[in-house]
Image 1 (cartoon, one colour):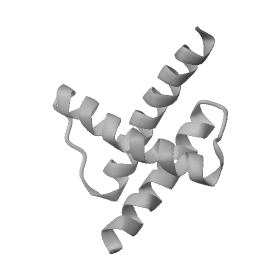
Image 2 (tube, one colour):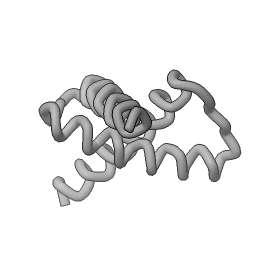
Image 3 (cartoon, one colour):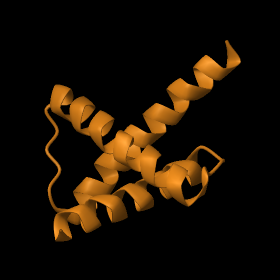
Image 4 (cartoon, rainbow, N blue to C red):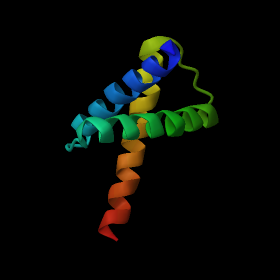
Length: 80
C-alpha cells in the first residue's frame, strides 16, 4: 500500500514539474496521470540510453523527463 502512495506522489510531483517546464498544468488528476505515464516513458528512454537513476530524486527526475517528452508529443499531435 505504501508503494502505491509513493508512486502516485512521484507522479504528481513529476506531472507538476513537467507542467511548469512546458508552461501548462493539467490539474491534480491530470498531473498525476501525466507523471505516471511519464515515469513509464522516462524509464524506457533512460533504459535505452543506459542511464540508471536510483532513489526518490532519481525517480522524480526520470518521471519528469518522461512527462516532458509526453507533453511535447501530445502538443505535436494537437497542432496537426
